Image (cartoon, rainbow, N blue to C red; front, top):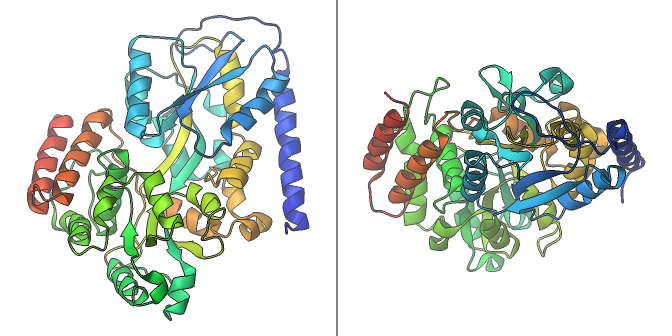
Length: 431
């Protein structure tokens, strides 16, 4: 079923990966090992790659490629919990003890400022990475005070997954662009016998980083902001209230099922794949997994809807950073070049629907033919709004989760939650 051009691209990608691995092999097998201080990149030998649990099964095969050609510089995969907050906490604990157990860190894009400001990661040699070929919003997530402290390995933009078969049968010709349209479409679809017992919509609403993302998207999609680009909080506004009210009202009128308050990414994905949801907000990784489920051929993606038109995703993704306390930093830099290369990220796109940082991959006709969500994904990334890029990110996201959750569960009104959040963010910013 693959086109000739697609097979040619994949073959070229494998060749490029092989060439990159062989090139990185040069002068790498001398077995030298050493501890390098911050800012220096010396020492060769075994390293570790630290990331959240690989739910796609795609990471270890890529590490195996590296390890086969670098027997004296092997990479060991340290898998952390799937929960982003737990990942961040374990990485911080490792840094605070100045342990060399972690080498290359897979950082959520919003952690760069915090890790760089605390000198937990090294400033990188910017000219060694093809940043000019990457999407600009993605590159900006890897910088702190104009210095490069990480290398984009994947991006992420939220998308609206929807059941094409049910919308078509209900006479709906296109996906919704506003929240009101989505609710109206749900009401129409739920009249179908096939939709009996289905819920309308869900995202990620458990009290963790996913709630920070979904809350931010609702605020931004209603014309508000959590913080300005300068970091100044401005969340106690009429626009932000309209965004939070959409989520609160959706729980109250059962647009979002009650169990949605417990959903993380995987919970929502499984609910959508098992036929419990008509619409679902999630990341691109879901696309390939849903294609292996009972709804294969029955779903598509669209940009997130908003209050008065298309909404805005939070900018997601992961960047590679080098622990300031690691050994064998020369090996680490070579591995980061390999793991963030256009060929490697194209492979991750193919096997796990990870959004690549390279602009050219979104325009490749063969790839778009095989992965039709790419234009939607690119639009999502380019329209995305970063979560607060602040040094005290842990305090900021905790406050956002706490107040949003209080509003969603009814322990506070939207107005009170936003007022309390504004005060908390001002305190974190020292204002």
